[in-house]
Picture 1 (cartoon, one colour):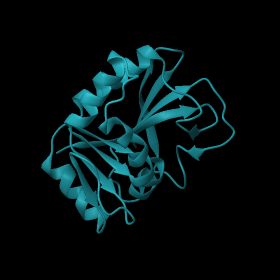
Picture 2 (cartoon, rainbow, N blue to C red):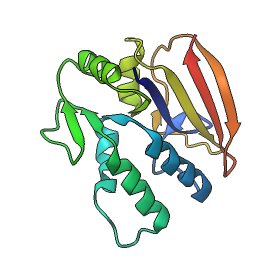
Picture 3 (cartoon, rainbow, N blue to C red):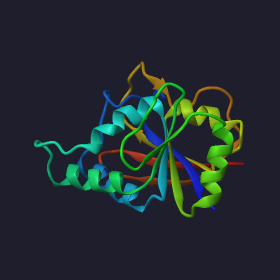
Picture 4 (tube, rainbow, N blue to C red):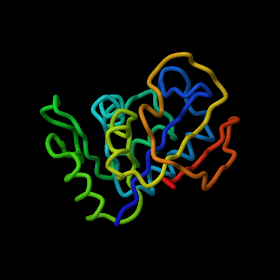
Length: 176
């Protein structure tokens, strides 16, 4: 059975906003390796539309960007959306009975599956489907954006903290 992990970059004031800050080269390399090791990713619509950028090669990419794209394209993706009619390569649309679909995905796979998108993660918290929360805490304050956490959370316990590159620390929590 797969482990479902919600992890994202977060500002000190609790926001996720891909336009507010980006990982530096060493942290980006970490994300390449992490994505390479995934069994898959489950996306909310908004974040999937942002990440679909990696489906097509871009002339300005360097080696790291090409490596990330290869890793991202290689694993299955499931996209939770009521408004999308289709998704890109190696992706499956989940439009109805999200809880049953995600439970089936979790049961059918081993390893780690990312939960990508704070709105999607919030909808799964109450269902007890998230096995771990991974915060990549960046030393910036945004003052706006989508909060990493929204709404009530289950009690959690810190299970790991690890300094990363570029003054970022990774905090890993599990439901208590």
